[in-house]
Image (cartoon, chains in turn orange, brown):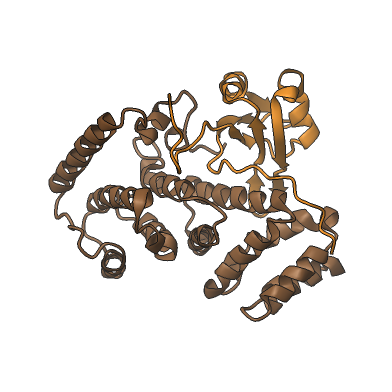
Length: 113
Length: 271
């Protein structure tokens, strides 16, 4: 039997999907994964990228926390390396990694202020 | 030549107010007030902008970065979604900095290391995040074709990043497992440093200060051979230690073998 020592990491369940096209929207992204994974994730967050003429582009990113650590493997198998092609023909190869910080928001009480 | 007059950016009043709170009002004596005002904001409308402003720690005073970290921790009680986003965002910035390695981003990158360290000090991230970041800095892009662009042999900037993070929160790694983790990291760090060859004096002095502060009795190895021998000995030691308590298998090795890729072996191309 494995006893959980203090400070020992529990199985990681939060992933980050990077290098998504800057123009990809939240609904586009989740539209692609929802049919397979919608009921397997417990929390998601999406950071849209940006295309700016001066500073170049910023890729979009998504964070997904899965209910079960095994789903991370399934998801990575399904989505890691997935190639998006945008309207101009540029390729974006999505990468799936464990999020460096595994924290997921707790439900906050409503701020009464 | 004809040139259109420069138009200054006009921000909505709400954004102007947020900027005033964070960039001019905020100091040690007003932080309670600023926190209260931030809580009163219409969060639905301005959460994204607030996140953007929190990431601009490099625009403010270096000595004030801890105030932004304190605000983050203070807001986590009511807006944990936001507080988690701050951490994810800082870690992304650090990663992006390693991928792009743009000289113009250096000041920002140092500020973000400081910010991460302060988030640890305010108990908003745990030590594993700090150590993962430290190791990421040592190995990112190494053994790939881009190594010379991402971490040129004469470039000491990554040493600066490590120094900054450890100056900020290293003194807390003085007992228990985090003490062991820092001991172990510092040997890996020494190997990285020795790989750089002769260091500029300012970097060397900062390193001496860092070691004097954190581990005054630690050996500074003089050659790659010595430090490699020390690492082999350390691994040997860890193996016997983990064999003794067979239940807790070496967790960091297990991570490296995992089937999901980790940041260190991802190619850094940004298309």
